[in-house]
Image (tube, rainbow, N blue to C red):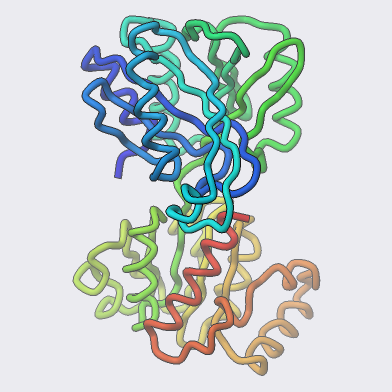
Length: 344
């Protein structure tokens, strides 16, 4: 599944101009949060979504004028109660949307988006910084910067360098926001695709993998049994690994990425796996099991020197409490918890 960045680059490579619609702010009810982005082509086809319904229709309706003037605009779109109800909300609200013209002939713009795609392909986290104005005007590539934890790409600018210094103080936890200084800037974090490692390849894991792929998680399966860990049983998985029967060396052998999601559903080696998961700096760790098993595993890890606060961050028993019983229901409860963590 292509990202918005990839769709933009594809269009620019074909010398097709595009318009992007990005939610800057919202008040009241709206179907998507600030940072939601949609690409609009001249033929009115789109990629991504800013929430569907009236909001999306109005952005598409405004796009032809942006193509004509080649100027960006910030539009405040009011959603009536009827609009909100059609989108599943209780009441209306107001949404501020940036409509941005992206010129295929703007070399600076082209270079910035190519760099963004290059970083995405290499799984490098980055933040895109865009200087925006209250007045309508053309946003060139010289108004965009990309910053990683170590590098900054774009025109030299003292204010942007100051912003980057602040961003790097908490680089892995940046949220979409507007930065207001001498100018106004849109701060868009682009983190690597959420990676999920499911340790254990039983029936519950099959159901989890089927759901997470459709939600955009890069899903990897780990098990010591070749008869279970294979592409026939997990056709939607991005990776399937047969690991040693001891389950040791997972961090080195599988290269579990930091800020990933780890779900432990093994058949009896949870302590070994959890011990390594705690060292992986994961964003989420969930372990299936009863309170008795949890207490037993935790007590062993505490004796080995792990801190209680580290164990407190583990979701055990894993999943949202919905009285799930079947593998399908348990999988839904686990995936619901993954979504909750991703969106929190």
